[in-house]
Amino acid sequence: MQQPVRKAIFPVGGLGTRFLPATKALPKEMLPIVDMPLIEYAVQEAMAAGIEEFIFVTGRGKSAIEDHFDRHFELETTLSERGKTEALELVLQSTPKPGRIAYVRQGEPLGLGHAVWCARRFVGNEPFAVLLADDLIMSDPPTLARMVEVYEERGGNVISLMEVPSEHTSRYGIVEPGDDDGRIVDVQGLVEKPRPESAPSNLAIVGRYILQPDIMDYLSLGSLGTGNEIQLTDSMIKLIGNHPFHGLRLTGTRFDCGTKIGFLEANVAYALGRNDLDGDARSSIAAILEAF
Ligand code: G1P
Image (cartoon, rainbow, N blue to C red; front, side, top):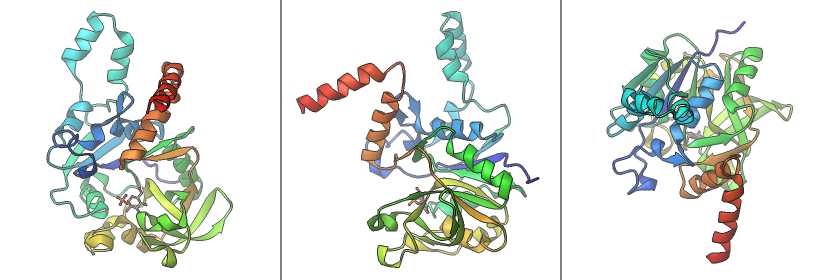
């Protein structure tokens, strides 16, 4: 029996400069995909995987995220009095139980590894998940739940992987693969954002991780890596050999909502995937393609 994965870290401290001016006063994680903020997709995915405690690593200007995951009694009462039960359910669906959500400030934007390390006191001595909301994954069953299954079978660390064109390796953490059964890959090494000519494969890390808590010891060293940032990948390398380390190939579709095109694609795909919007969305998109 593995120690259960009960806690998840959501690094949400980024400035969102690619989406200015939209993100001048609004956290990028609050931008909607159709009608739900990006961050709520990640929280729902975590809930579906059995996560009970939610730790957000935030920064200045991110308070809308705290309000979003809090109760809103005035709104709830009004919706209830007006008999708007569906809307009320939507408002309540992703609110973690009282005391199960925590916010910690990153202070300085020193990298993903630093963001995760900022959550160390909340994580304690348990395995934990990390979800990067920018990586939106449309998959059934959802990605983190699939990873938890692999973790329960094999223990250690589990990351999510996808194949990328070799000219894109410098955008991702890349795996040096060992045994590979087409679904699960044994991770023998990792490199953060290698150039194509030095990449050990074209298997890239997607923003979903299940990690053992001793990674915090390595992150504490604060060593700078690619881009002069404290990289999560660099400390994950140190875990290889201490524990099993597996990559699970992604199923479904991943949208890079950190880019404008990925964000647009996600909006179109999620609208087309919705029973209540599908028909209208399809004809609207066809009409727009005709007109422009
Ligand atoms: C981060 C990680 C990288 C991973 C990527 C997935 O990079 O450092 O290893 O492949 O997320 O989206 P970032 O996108 O923050 O530059």
